[in-house]
Image (tube, rainbow, N blue to C red):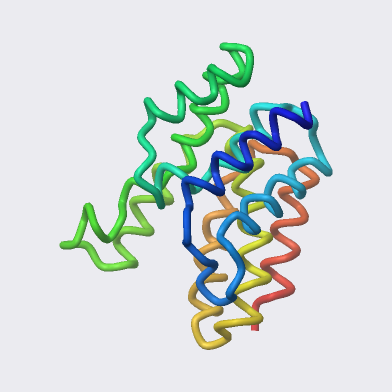
Length: 180
């Protein structure tokens, strides 16, 4: 399993290329790795861990679903590859500024939250870890925007209750503690 996760991490890192985290000079891959490690505290399910590493690839890079599928099939059993891709697709924002320029941030987030309510419990588990990691970073690096961001997460968590319960509780606690 470690070899597969390392290869997936390398694929995601290469896909993200020279992207850096928004508020730090860190290569983008540090975020998906932290998300995966948080998930790993609660599960050893390879599709969840793999999707955690890949969760921003379709949204933030030029990699297509087919390219990701082909890569995953070359590295894992077919059933795990299909599950991994499913979770990544579920976590990929649909209502982006680029695709919906007529909608403001609040409108896009409202539509995205409605969509996210339908995702699998496994994808929700990954989202909890994503929320935890992003919440810590936003408070440290953008305190003026943090209240808006954190209240969006707080609202979202009210409806995303099908994932790992312990990680859900941790995400809620993280957001609540970070709220100004």
